[in-house]
Image 1 (cartoon, protein in one colour):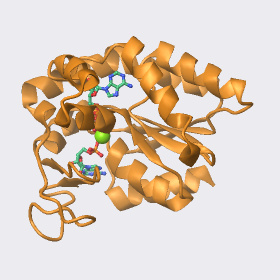
Image 2 (cartoon, rainbow, N blue to C red; image 1 turned 45 degrees about the vertical axis):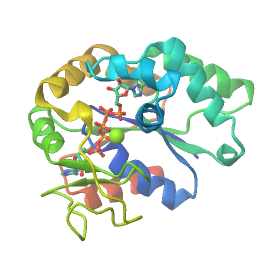
Image 3 (cartoon, protein in one colour; image 1 turned 120 degrees about the vertical axis):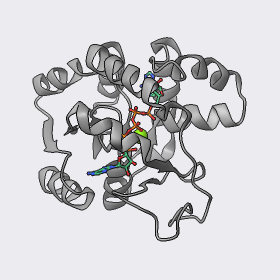
Image 4 (cartoon, rainbow, N blue to C red; image 1 turned 180 degrees about the horizontal axis):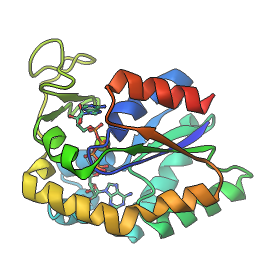
Length: 213
Ligand code: AP5
Ligand code: MG
């Protein structure tokens, strides 16, 4: 199963992608997480990406496309993957389509998680992330069992650098301008599924798994 997650920043792509990946036993690939790991390790790619991420802008396609296509060529992607945060531009979607087509494959489903902009700011200010395994929590909506500690791996949770309110507003603007057109792209491909992302995380997951079957 080859799945793409769509939705605004904070819509719950990461939260749901982890569980979908578990359900289908396929890797969860988040371009945001790959960039953040590179920033942490101070690689050249990370330093370049940070310039854009701190501003709430997209990392240029020249950097992002090659990185993602090389990741999905890895052996663990043979049975599919859940892409979280890619594609984010039409050229990214076209490159992905072309690369898969060369292997006689295609995206099976694009899941668009819909959440109004008003709800996004609240979600971001309370988000806590695991820098080790990518687990995502919220201080009130989805708290870990032990405050500040990842349920899955026991690592201390952190707040993301780009979750400041002014950066979140810019990320939303970037989303509407550059990423939202992908909804129509995947609708035209005949693989779009839309879910209401304002429900509880467990209900959103149920809706997605139901639609995938
Ligand atoms: P990325 O890491 O992908 O960030 P994003 O798209 O802005 O999305 P988020 O991770 O912020 O939100 P999410 O939808 O995963 O929500 P989450 O599950 O955490 O990208 C970061 C940056 O990297 C970009 O700005 C860009 O610069 C760069 N980048 C990445 N990919 C790129 C690409 N392809 N091209 C160019 N640049 C790229 O949930 C949010 C919060 O809400 C959490 O606290 C969660 O617990 C809570 N929550 C989740 N679901 C619910 C619910 N149903 N009800 C209540 N709370 C909920
Ligand atoms: Mg995410």
